[in-house]
Amino acid sequence: MAGTKTLLMLENFINGKFVPSPSYIDSYDPSTGEVYCRVPNSGKEEVEAAVEAAKAAFPGWSARSPQERSQVLHRLADLLEQSLEELAQAESKDQGKTITLARTLDIPRSAYNFRFFASSILHHTSECTQMDHLGCLHYTVRAPVGIAGVISPWNLPLYLLTWKMAPAIAAGNTVIAKPSEMTSVTAWMMCKLLEKAGVPPGVVNIVFGTGPRAGEALVSHPEVPVISFTGSQPTAERITQLSAPHYKKLSLELGGKNPAIIFEDADLEECVPTTVRSSFANQGEICLCTSRIFVQKSIYSDFLKRFVEATRMWKVGIPSDPSANMGALISKTHLEKVRSYIKKARAEGAQILCGEGVDKLSLPPKNQAGYFMLPTVITDIKDESPCMKEEIFGPVTCVVPFGSEEEVIKRANDVKYGLAATVWSSNVGRVHRVAKKLQSGLVWTNCWFIREPNLPFGGMKSSGVGREGSKDSYEFFTEVKTITVKH
Ligand code: NAD
Image: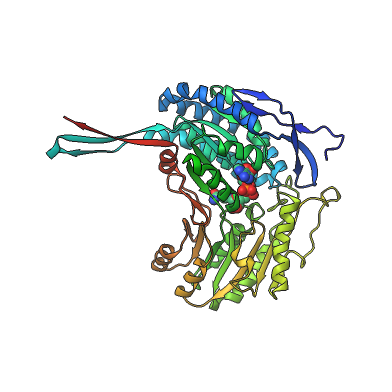
């Protein structure tokens, strides 16, 4: 429970105003394990108020030209950029990520999301075909769907929230967003900028709280026809069930069990540090992080040696330390879950080469109760092990050898997920061949996490339904109509 310290108190943002909540939940600082903030524990009533506001704002906002909406989004991007340092500090404290990552990735990218969709909304065209023999012209028109429900996770809080909110409002929808109850602070800070940016009241509403209360109230609301969700697979199942009776449009961006495939002709100078980063960036709490590393037998021991050495250099530190590569995990429960996978692997006879239980973590006294762990490398593990099949979403990666190209493709595809893969080889033919055969929505070759927001982003199999990006997000947040004119 909250002590006597002054806690940061968040409020819902509905119809352009901050609204206090009758009840609150505690939010923890992952680097100390202490409660430092209280988040509204919203439910049906707050969602209902947000729906009323979003409904009232829709006619005015959707009637504006794309150029007018674009200008508002650019102003919001400017304001986020002007508050970069303040937002980065807040994101790092709230989530446990390093200040460096918040400064260089989370907040710049959140601002860029508004800038990107402010621009892309100006460049969509509709389709037109002719049927001269029948004297007909067919064309399509698109219109915003209405009120968009946006539900986002805790790993990249403002980044993923704005990645959905920006295309939704750019296309003329109004939005009700529910960020993760564990990382709500930067969304609340962004609300303070909306009026200055020229976002009219009711266009963006943020209702804070838990999934089962605020989230389900939003998903079940009959007047919210479109839900864009990023989070875990079990939550996606629940959201699908709740929205089915209303035939809602759904976009689901879910987890991954992402393979890295390293062939003997890979440039290890480039591959080793990138694969350390792809395994442990943001404490391994990125849906795109690598968690299964397949290395061709002839270079297996060389790779493993270099990889473990480089992992040991990946510094775990308090989030405010600019030299830290990794901060704290999001919660005690999550830390325990991640550790339980390592325990299982050990019990199965796998080897833990570095990290948890092998090396010693040193932290300042005030951070001893924080949710820290060392980046951990596991080997001698079977493909059937839970560590090789299930999403751990923490700083744990498994390294295993493979023989042939055919074999590794089969093993890489043998999980229920299909989000992201990386392939390392200097043979361009092989790179194209393997990338095509991987069951994965994204394949990076000889690199990782270089994003092109114009192109589709998303997963196949249990990693999701739908794609996001310039054209895909526009199509998702609009309804299309085909019109036929006979002349
Ligand atoms: P989560 O599913 O627990 O929660 C995500 C959001 O859903 C939160 O806002 C939560 O409050 C809400 N929620 C929970 N239960 C709900 C319910 N019954 N109804 C409505 N909303 C509900 O996920 P998380 O733990 O916050 O995030 C981690 C997961 O997100 C991982 O699986 C990760 O891979 C995935 N993820 C995917 C992507 C992607 O783009 N594919 C990106 C980031 C994270």
